[in-house]
Amino acid sequence: MATYNKMWQLGNCDICANILYWRILRWINTFTMKTMGFGMNGKAITIFHALPAEKEKPIGTWGQRHQTYLKNYKKALYISLLTSGKLNGYLVDIDGQAQERMCLLVTQMAKQEKVTEQLKAESPMLWVGKMNEIQARAREIVNDEIIYS
Picture (cartoon, helix red, strand yellow):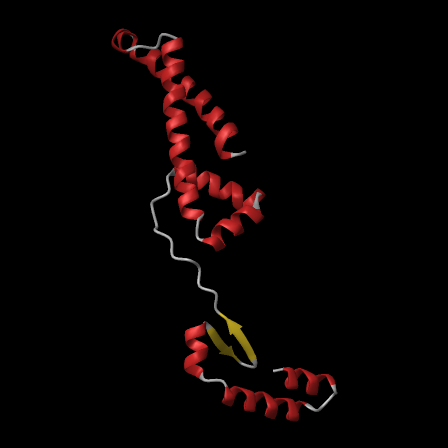
């Protein structure tokens, strides 16, 4: 390959470069190229980098939101996780953390504001309104602490 580059720099014509290129190709065993992850595309030798195999797990809503955030605002981290094969596991972990935090916050806020099953039985519409408000506040906290940080 060094000879090819040297001859190209000397200003030889395209025909000479093409002849040399095809001679080099003849020397390279295609079986070896395929097993090592190389491929041919016209005159370029392409290296196919296979991503590490990762066990695919379903990603929930929180994980998908965090993935969108990483794609848009933390591109280096996103690409690093993607190329290392750790993206799916990372997003599943974030999703689990966010679900646990959301559940804990809703439970604590409902207890603190005395939104109980008794209130649900006596005044269902009031209970629904209060629970929706609690869930909205908890969602904002989870977004700030886990998803968009």
